[in-house]
Amino acid sequence: MRINLASVLVSDQAKALEFYTATLGFVKKTEVPMGEFSWLTVVSPEDPDGVELVLEPASHPAVKPFRDALVADGIPFTSFAVADVQAEYDRLVGLGVEFTQPPTAMGPVTTAVFDDTCGNLIQIAAMNEEA
Image (tube, rainbow, N blue to C red; front, side, top):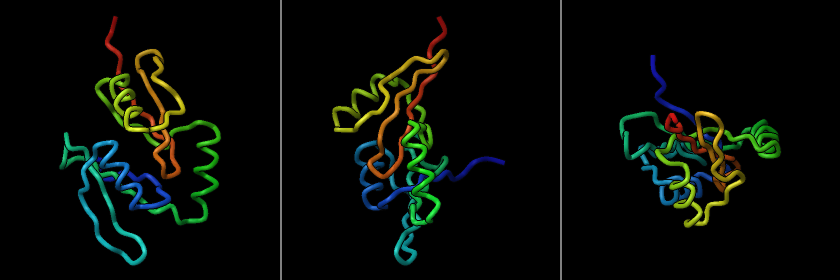
């Protein structure tokens, strides 16, 4: 058994696709129109046959209070692995991404949290080298 799909709930699929590809650097994998929305996925260019991230429409009534509560508490919806949190933070800040938590060492991991412009906080994380 393996994970093949993960989802992030987005307020606007077109806006999310632009942010997740042009800003974060993911690559569109699948886009199948399904009425008002699409089955829309992105992948890491480092692993194009790996786990697909579904840019899932946030249209269900339960989504807004759930996401609002997570954001209010500063809790990221998901986490993406990066090689160097500070370097990725610097790159994304240069592109106008707003962070709610700068790079912060937390024991064996360093994390930072940003607003994905589509209703979510997203964490980036990297394991720290052992001292």
